[in-house]
Image 1: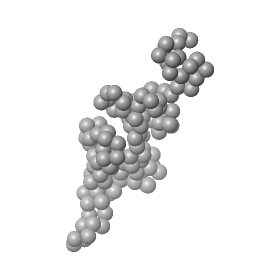
Image 2: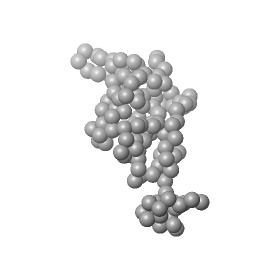
Image 3: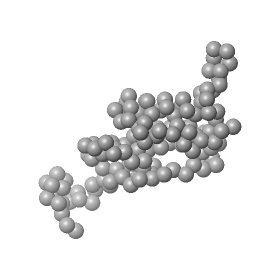
Image 4: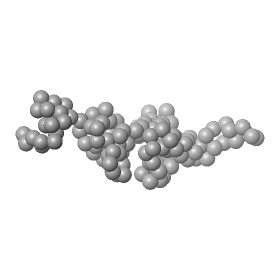
Length: 129
């Protein structure tokens, strides 16, 4: 194994195998059960000093190197009505577009990570009824 001097200074040689992994681009494939529940949880990583955002596999999210990357998740609505359903002045159902935009906004407020360019299609994976 070739040791990088900066890594050795930061972690020591005994911890080299404990350093987290780098993210790998991933595309979810919603299952029948996901469509029945109406949501999938999507995970994204952003390198701390860059603006590049990757969608990542939920299984690898806890393994991403925390000193180099931020990891965020959101609940992405994939089934239901496209637009909100109103009954007079009362919202009966929140639409997929509005729900997904709300999640993107929440992540931005909570983490300062803007997923809007990555998740420009608010109907991605959607199946309406």
